[in-house]
Amino acid sequence: MTGMGMRRYLIALGLGLWALGLAEGLAQQAPQLRVLPVQGNVHLIAGAGVNLTVHVGEYGVLLVDTPPPAVAPQVMAEIRKLSPLPIRWIINTSVNPDHVAGNAALVGPAGGRGAPFGFVGLGRPAIVAHENVLNRMANPPAGQPATAPGALPTTTYYLPTMDFSNGEAVILYHQPAAHTDSDTVVLFRESDVISTGAVFTPGRYPVIDLERGGSVQGLVAALGSILALAVPDGFESGGTQIVPGRGRISEETDVAEFRDMVAIIRDRVQDLIKKGQTLDQVKAARPSRDYDAEYGATQVDADRFVESIYRSLNQPRARS
Amino acid sequence: MTRFSRTDIIGLAVLALMLPAIPAFGQGIDFTGQWVPVYHEDGPERIPGPELADYAGLPINDAARLRADSYDANRISAVMEYQCRPHAADYNLRGLANLRITSDIDPLTQRVTAIHTRINFHDAERTIYLDSRPHPPAEAPHSWGGFSTGVWNGNMLTITTTHLKPYYIRRNGVPASDKRTLTEHWVRHGDFLTIVSIIDDPAFLTERLVRSQSWALDPGQRMGTNWCEYAPELPLGEGVVPHWLPGANPYLEEFSEWYGLPFEASRGGAETMYPEYRQKLKQTFSTLDRCQRYCTCFNGTGGCNLR
Picture (cartoon, each protein chain N blue to C red):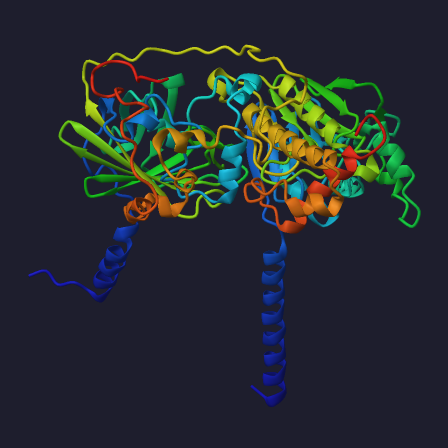
């Protein structure tokens, strides 16, 4: 081999090794998705930010919430393992960016074909949400970029419930002031599965987004409405399976434990407010301290949760 | 004389290295049968039930202590979802635990591949897999029985259980989180079964909680069935959850007063688990003149003489 040939060989070898390293690095960065059967026609895709609930029905795939755009191709690949049918519906359970981030990515080419549920033409899934999601996404606060048109909900509802069929009844329940004012809890009636969105997040404190209409009392009420929908099998085992916005697949008592945590910390904060304590004093009292480790909270997380409760209870409106 | 080639020797060496990784199916002894619990250990805690605010001997942290102080027994009446709960696997070993153990046998190898337990209270059933299967991912559901796998250590079966639901480690509100792991060592001595249970709970325990429970073989035992229906026993407003606010529970000192114990001892913590703590107690209190609580529970005279 000549000197020039050897140099070319070494350059090619170096580039090859660099590419291998890059590919390995990318592989390490790519999130590890985990697909778990939940019950009936429902699956959970975990590891893509928020939990994604996948319903495989007679007419196609229904997806609850969407992943970050960068993960959308991976999510689609996993959905394809569950069904060859197109995504026909995407349900956004909240206006929170964590739940709508992948809307545009999934209704585009990555999402494949789909029939409409609302007004849009053939060839893309319908995005279903409470009308407050559309209102907030279409009218972002000053200084924030406009939402891409393809990411906006195409089918909205404003009544307490909305229902349709994907081979089984799919019922949407609006929660008017919980995590936000636009939360939807989804019941898959025959599969006996509830997808809760951000209202229920076992293992971590819920986010009460006061700027978007959330409230602690509404959150407790929303958790109560999930409890009212869930029916356990004998001795509080099995029965209705509950897919939370984040965290593990759950059952009725898990929601009860979570609701009780929110209610008890709310009562403690309320008691301190009655005693005239300021926000700083309430935070210093650490009213969530016996729950922090169980809910994986840093002091910052705990303070944020306590502050949201404090501010919610101090809101002048009845919905506090 | 047979000669081994170099390939044979390498192959045998690789096989030898793999041997420890091969699951040890079916070693050990037979645990199957009907078992009746023996309450010679921790009787007052297990049968009549613990006194309120008795946390002695538990290696709990401040979070667990506050949670237990906040516990109001009305909660299990008012929150209907708690009314029909079975015990979680770790507490079940402590409760009214008439026990039946069965096993699955692989028809080809005649090795035990799984053990099943049924404890009478609320039909609590559990499977312990012996086939080296992995535990489920974090997102998998938790259950009262959890997910259990076992390995044999000679005649002792060691079981690891994860994916347990949140529950309690003492029936007076001392909490157990869903992050805990239960390790069990099952040992059989003739007609007696002893299970040493070890709870690791990063949310509520500063050290491992080690306890033991025993059963006696009872071939004539006949297990019944249970049923449970919800009922609004204590109707409260929506979203109302009974609990005591921090510092407001008026019953926290009853236990220490009744038993003549220093209040600090009743508060638990790792120190209170060890025998050395008795020496410390001797310096600060003297025993009561006569027994006042649970004096006759276990001596055959009937009743617990509660006031």
